[in-house]
Length: 127
Image (tube, rainbow, N blue to C red):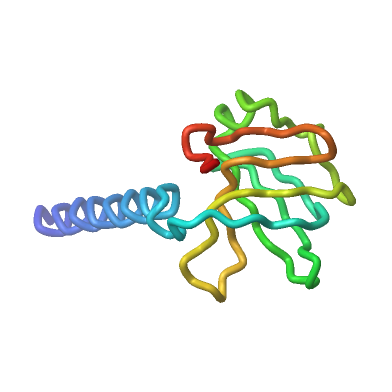
């Protein structure tokens, strides 16, 4: 009985460690290229929530991108809220795209919607 309980604890520890590792890997920058690129397109969907707000943006070539912003507090501090963009708006995202060229995903450092710019990661913007 005691060994069965230890096995359960071990399983919980391993599962927790794997989850934490995946979360750090996903939310860090290691998955993204070092070079910044620009994506111009049309907003198709806006999500404001955990773990971080995202936009679904259709590029000029018709492909649908996921543009990740900062965590909700950081994104709000940049001035971007649920009313900052809506489906149909034109957007310019500057950021770091996924190293996996098959994955249409970008971590935005700056977002421009209409005449308004949102510096999500001002310290990372390359001028």
